[in-house]
Length: 51
Image (cartoon, rainbow, N blue to C red; front, side, top):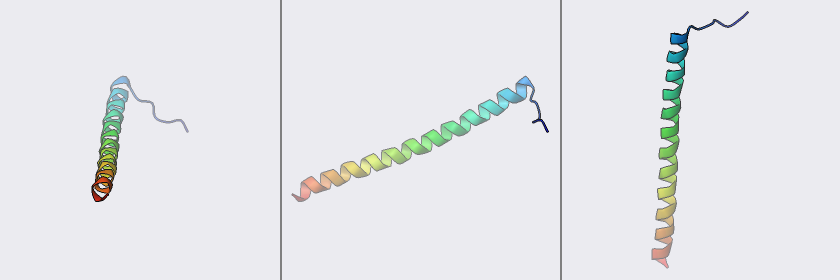
């Protein structure tokens, strides 16, 4: 069974939605990375302070 073919407008809409979802995923990943980086910097700072 062949997949349903999409017309141009449907394809554009689908691709736009996928791009928006990707953008949200990237934003979440960036926020996680930023949090981890902040955590590492704070740990290093706390280590220095305790010495």
